[in-house]
Structure formats: C-alpha cells, structure tokens
Length: 437
Image (cartoon, rainbow, N blue to C red; front, side, top):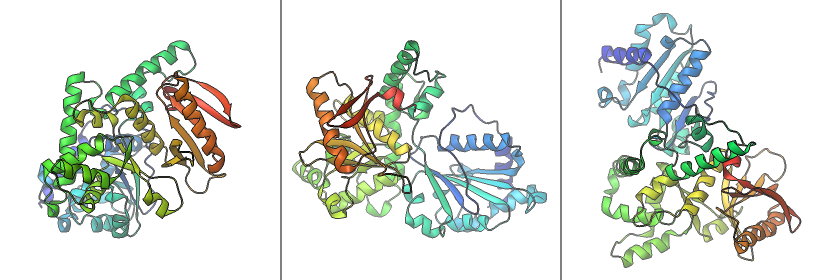
C-alpha cells in the first residue's frame, strides 16, 4: 500500500473534530507493554469509546499529533494485508520523525481484526519504545486463549456492552436523584423507557417504529457479517440458522437445552445435529450476541447435567427479532439485570435448591475478595401478588445459608424494603435505584 495514502488517513483522523459523546463508564486503563482491547457487539459504542479515550488524552495534555488512529472499516484499507501493516507506523513517523522514541505515541486501531494475521504487527509495535496500542473488535476471540497465545499474553481486554441505565440517564441529562419524590418518579419513568428501547447508543432518540426497524437491521448485519461471512467453511444456511436463532431468542431468560431445540427443529422439518447447534451457539457467543448462564456448581459434571439459561446482548434487540409476540417484558427485565451484573464484573450463574426453588442469579466476586463473594439475586417485575412474593423470598431463604451468601436481593420495578425471612436479611430494591448504585 502507498505510504502517502496512510499519511492522508492519519492526518485526516488527527484533524477530525470529535463528535459529541455520552460518557461511557468502561475504564480504559492501558497496562505497560500490553495492548488494550475494547471488545463487544457491533454498534455497542466501541468506536465512540475510543473517541472518549482521545478526549481523555487531550485533557492530560497529549497533542492530537501524538495519536495515530486507523479505522479498518475504511474502504481505502479493504485490501490491506498483514504483511503490509508496518506501512502504518512508517507513514506516521515519516510525518513526525521527531517523535520516534522521544515522545509517547498512541496507536488506536478500530476493528483491526478485519486483517487476518494482525497480531504480529501489534507485537512489533509494543516492542517499539514509547508506543502504546488500543484496539477494538466485535469478536470474543480477542478475549480467548487463541488471541492471548498469538499475542504472547500481551493483551488486556475489556468488554463494552450497550448503554447501562446509568449511561442512559447520563445521555438524557437526567439527574440521578434517588431521594426526592420528583427525582424517583423521573427515574422510574426513564427506566420504563430504557426497558422499552434497550441500550444501543445510536438508536435512543428515534421514534418507536424506526427504532424497531433499525434493531432488526442491526441483527441482520450481525448475523451476516459476524456469523455467516466469518465462518465460510461451514457453508451456513441463513434460513436454517435463523430458525435456530428464533428458537433461542424465544427462550430468552428461560431454561434451554440444545438437544431439545434440535429435536423440536427436526419435528418441524429442519435438520440439525446437536454438535452443529453447539458450534453455532459458540459462534453467537463469539459475536457477543447471546450469553449462556450455567448452573452454579464447582463440578463441571453437575454444570453439564443441568440446563442453561440464555440472555441477549440487548433485550430490545431480541424482542424486535423474535416472531409473533416477542419477548415478554418480565423476561426482558431479567435480561436487563443479567447484563448489569456482567458489566460489574461478576461471574454469573443460576441456582436451584433441593426443593426445586430457583435463584435467578448467583453473582460471584472476582477471586481475592474477602468472604464467600457470593450474592444472590431474584428478579421480579412486581411483588404485589402474595404468592409471587412468597416464592421469591422462600427461594432466597433456602439458598442463602447453603451457599453462604454475603447478600440477598430482590430487584423489582419499583418496590423497596428490607426484611428478614428464615433468619436471612433480604433487600428488596427498585431497579432504577440499584442500577445507579
């Protein structure tokens, strides 16, 4: 590739005015001599998070000329090969030769995984004095052992999801007032809007019909680019694969077994082997579209013997795609809580007591924390029905002592109290408050 073309791309990026941004909460904290990766589903805001990172650098006195930003979805780079990637730093340092080895230079590569074999170039840059690398990608391969091995352990990744409720509130300029009656009412109203719209940043200010249509367009693009085109060797049929997807999405927040889905599809005339469906499920995880949650147990055998529960990267996206009546609001609500637990860095499982009572989520702290690190969450849209209330509390009461839980919560739409049940303290908390804590 011509070095002059890269010089133009680099200079244009430096002179480009940054767009208005809603501050994202995901910290970007590069580790010395390691690349930093922002990963997540398409359209979740990875590119804009890199813009925010640039603003953070500017606020520390870093000059735009010390930033080399390259977006690999640029049509001018479509034919760029891995062995040609070094033209990037050649072009940069030909523009600013005085900076080589003397000043910190920040390389930002958006969607670099489009270039097969890119890892060696990143390793090369990390070996250069005073060079740091930030990359983004729409594939969980940036988190897995495959890439960690290729980068020789020199990559640190963080997952970005669509807007959290805190970011949603920030986007609309609403004060996080959880004390006054007016503030609480405003947050409840905004939460209901959040549940309806979901968190994809680019769609928040659209009318309902266009919002729904674009969510469907997002999904089609994700499936085509990140599944079908990303795995040409599988010769995946879009029609058949879509039937499998609908079967999964219809079970959002519900128990799922791949074998049962395979049986049902065969009865409908769509033939899949269970092995193929497990592979497709893995692809969906790689593209950050769906997340399976396993039974809480230290035994791999026990986990494998129990069903999984499936959650989507965005509940509104799942609702827009599923045929017929879509995803019930109570299951969207549970999906919302799951994503927040994932954002907060918990390991997330579900649990079922010997009596058959289910705990929606066992959230486990990262290793190294004091205590058991286990927090139990029930998710219930409303506790107004006495039978429902008893069911949710009873499950927590039975599971808390057995799992040595540090805390027990019921997340609801708008109920709040602290009570004791079977000697266990349980905090009932409205989602609009818990999501902001």
